[in-house]
Image 1 (tube, rainbow, N blue to C red):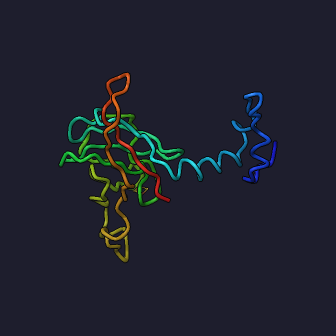
Image 2: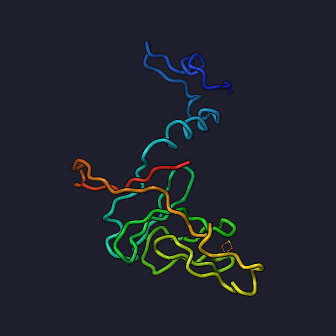
Image 3: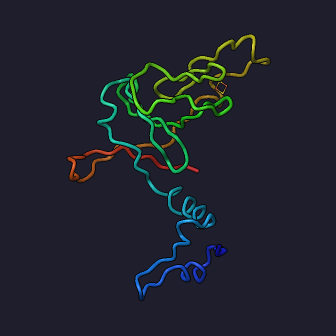
Length: 169
Ligand code: FES
């Protein structure tokens, strides 16, 4: 395995511009993969889905942002939301279906539940189980990353609007 420290010279050794060839190392090198996540995907808007996939309030589907599973929903107000598919308690996935329709997402581990906007809405046995009780509004809601819907050129499938999400790290 080639050690890649991010220097221009080591990166250039993997690309032969004259021959139009690249080393297969770029597909398997863990250092390159980590740099790609940091330098490309952590800074760019990422396509996570098409708004036609969540036509009605309560529709959802799972997507990915790099290695992260995310839920894209349309909330009760018709706003499209994107948030991590991860319970704020211990990180369990709160959604295990690829797509569907729901009123909330329930964590199967300890029963915390989240609204269509990703906010924590209920904690099972809250009074008995969490002493001292935490303030549910403080830091326990499933914070949504920045997301936006943008108009784009009509693609071959007639796609006009895309939902994009930016990794904010
Ligand atoms: S991990 Fe989700 S409720 Fe505990």
